Image (cartoon, rainbow, N blue to C red; front, top):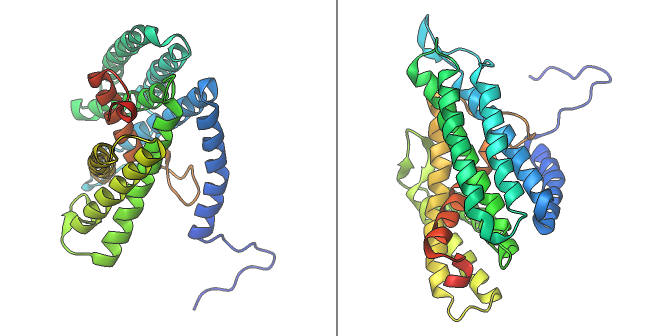
Length: 301
C-alpha cells in the first residue's frame, strides 16, 4: 500500500505529463529558430551542442569502480570537460559565423573548423595524462561526435536555396522514422535487432522506420513538385536506416558506461543526446551527400 501524501505536498507529475509539457515548451522555440534561420538557428544549435558535449563528457568520466569492476563510479568533472566544451563551441560557432557570409566562403569555414577540431581533440587527449588511454579517448571522440553533426545542421540551414526545406525534411523524416519504428516494433514484435545494445528494438521496428521515412520522402517530393517522387522516396528510406543506426550508436555509448539517460535536462525526455541521436546522424549524412554531389539532395533528385 502506498504511503499517504504529506499534507500540503504537491503530487508529482506523471512522466507522460512531463514529456508533453517539455515538448510544448521546446517545439515552438525550435520551430521559430528554424524558420528564422541565420544567427537565431546557429545560436540554438550551438547551445544544444554545448549541452551535448557536457553530457558526453560526464557520462564518459564514469570510471570503473576498483572494488567492483562490474560497477562504475559517479560522473565527475575532469580537465577534459571545459576543453571539450570550448572546442565544440569554437568549431560550431565558427561554422555558424561563416554560414552568414556568401556561400562561396564555405570552404574557408570548413577548413578552420577542421583545424579547430583536430588541434582541440589533441589538447583534450593530453589534458588528463594521469588517466588511462581508453578513458582519455572518449571525450575526444565526443568532440567529433557532437561538433561535426551540429555544424552540419547549421550548414544545411544556411543553404540560400533550400536551407529551410532541408531542415524541415530531415526533422520530419527522423520523427516519421522513430514513430514508425515504435509502432511496428510494438505491434509486430519479432526478432530483436541488437539485444545487447537496445533490447526493445526489433527488425520489424527497423522496417517500420524505413517505410515511414520513405513515406516522408514521397510527401516531400510531392510538395516540392519534383518530376518523380521515387528518387527522394528511396533516399529517405535509406536515411531511415541511418537514423536508427544513430540511435543505436548513442545507446551503445550509454550502455558501455551503465547509463540509461544522457541527463535529466529535459523533463520526461532525458538529455539532449537522447533526443537528437538519429537527427544528427541523418544531418551529417545529408551534408556529406550534398558536398559529394555538389548540390542539395532535394534539388538533385
